[in-house]
Length: 412
Image (tube, rainbow, N blue to C red; front, side):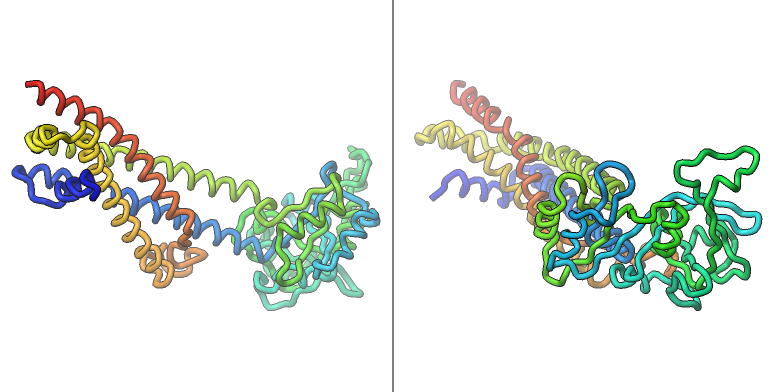
């Protein structure tokens, strides 16, 4: 029989002669439970927002994106690029070309980013799901070129989804100097019409700045007739991202970077991870403060049970055994609080995930109606290990206090 554990368990649940000890112990358990509950709920909410942002970008960003390490553009006739396109796990391959341009509509002007895409771009990205309006997805025909604007850029230009007059794109000529006498001669320009639709990604980076045009028009405007700024890939079903990246790396070498969706939006996801980490630190600090209540509870317990400790010493118990009784009592308080808090947190997260109990506000004002959450086993283990580590820090001095107190009492 584990005597310290058995006695500690009786001390934890038995009624004390002073009710204040029970109250302080209950407060300690409740504090740890509340901190554990807050930790698992907060981490799950950040996981939910992380997944929400990822789903928003997935409609516009490819699974993998290949960009040059140096410079903005690369030759699409490069032998390495040709070899990469023939890999069996690639279902769709599309070249894109991005460049800044001046967008003009009547008296309104706005700096924008043109994204020239191949004809198979709609097979690569789920572009149809983010298009709104009465028109269709179309970038060119025998008569003219078309451009699809982001919703916020459309509002800035005040042109509507289907303007009567065309918009005009201006891009500085490659390698040319700006003429002060005739500035217009220093730019390549082209009119674009609207196909009657606009896109909405719900991300400022795209909605505020991007214009989707055909790759041919983008090349004519920029002068990069055989170049592209990226090669975007859609993988075959069942092909893993890591495996695909390894094989692509072996073919492309060190001259290209292979970016997954998280790396394509590294700044956004870094902010989410940083906010999650800072929240974790703050809540861990609150947990540490809650754990220090255990010390008060254990010191008062030692005062009440000092005669029991002396009796155990007289019966031959070692100082370490007496010390472990009070340490084990503190461990039981921490574990009880952690399990209670985690259990309540897991139930709350699952209820929110399936029922959406906590709403964000009035319907239609946000991307989602309720707080997104996602429960991960790794977060449960992280919270549990955090409680154990913090509890160890707070309980560690108890053994020395108990040993010194019992020794001094025995000598008296």
